[in-house]
Length: 115
Image 1: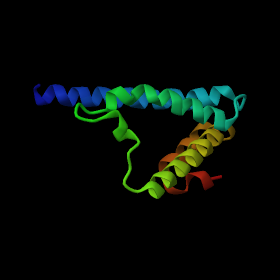
Image 2: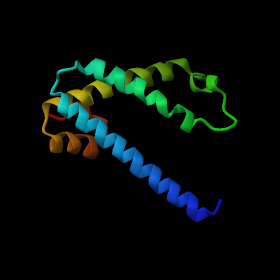
Image 3: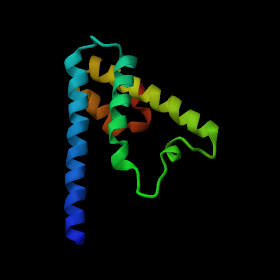
Image 4: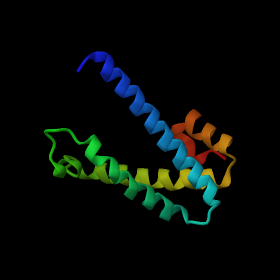
């Protein structure tokens, strides 16, 4: 494959990822809190599994996705991701879209605390 084609594929993949991200945020806003935040986060995680075949490398095994060398760090990441997902859904539900985007873009480390 020519390097230019690889760059074009990368740019198209980036646009697709941004479109999916924007669709996700807009769909949370459209729900207006009709679905609990934890349920919306769970549905988003389940739908994220659809991307796994595209992420997996040719030499990777499916069991490599859950293999870890440090179980405590893996569990810490799981807890932080769950809290961050639920907090972002609450922020997009309760705040105007511009304020929610600014909280997550400008201060990602403290985004659950931006109010």
